[in-house]
Image 1: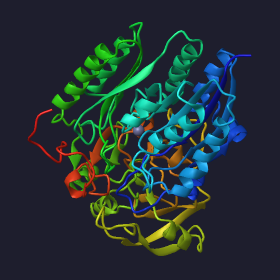
Image 2: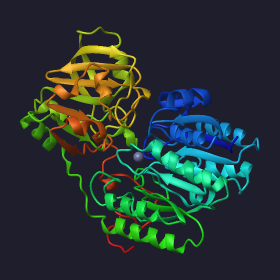
Image 3: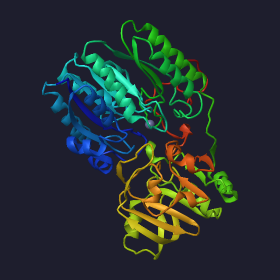
Image 4: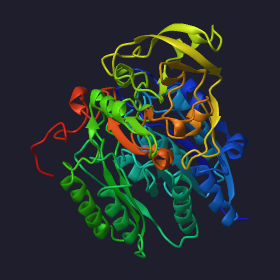
Length: 495
Ligand SMILES: [Zn+2]
């Protein structure tokens, strides 16, 4: 038999400005799967776990998977939720029977007692494994990579795509480097160069813009005998922590100075491009006016509500865009999701076909995205919210919006859900009776991930800023802990 390797997935992107704490239930709502269940549900899909299993199989590892846990982006992780998942990992690691560790993390977890959740997890892990066992971690491209992560993990590999479609590949990459470490062929460690910015200016988009060149340069650098992984991290701006922002991480061995120099070069280029914003963040009124005039001969107009993306920890109940579309009389349209469990519970008291007066959205914090809308709607359908993804990101993975209702008002169908989930897969409409391809206008809450599944059906895509919690207007948020100066809060300084 081959090496004994411990693995786990523990993922959270924490929006420290969110009012909604991330507790045990938030993980259960998204996914919390002990060993065998995790392998059954995630072991054959586009997940880190699947990539770990691929390499484990190749080298005949005795892979012991402890747990897979992830919650939707939201506020700080409670200490009890953090301990619940971390303790399981530490208890297994403490048995002393492992040669190496593989962790699928996000890299932007903040808890209610610590700004660096992953650093804390790794610290507790090292306390039981000692310094010598190699630890490999995978991170989301939107990781805020900390000094502690680089110090405590030997091998770091981030996703290389946004929309993220390479979870399994990234995990294979990390696991392959771990295998070489276990045999003693290489002795990797990881270094980081960060930029004084809240995030890479295009949020880490890899389909257009300068990221394409940086990722290519990273792949080239990995061809060296002494370099194993180069990760370009876009950072996650909605985190008021000292180590926020983009970074370049190199996992290499030997003399680290050429690797540092290479990373500094890319970091300098990220900084140089800080004014080159590719998205045109339209006002909701402008987006609605475009929608009202739109001719859908070449496919629907897809409008992304960037600012209210639940995938970045926004509440998903912002009403500004919906109100503008209704006011503009946009028809043959759909909108989703609007996260409002209270309204779904009200609708559950009715049956399809009923006309119901609802007070929709705007309940969590109307200062970010607009007040509740008083609407007379027709209830179309009710559901438990379960679906299975079919697109490149979550294909084959079961997910749930929680109790869900589809309603109609005029020519607009609205998907109202209970659990905050970003809209990034056509199935998230289709499973609830809404067919996006026959619409003229498809409005959804997402920043970039929707492109993986919606670009192929779209006649045109526009992005709007509804002024919700994840608006790119960062000056609206009160940052206290980020290191200053930092772009774009501070404009005039040199890096
Ligand atoms: Zn991400």
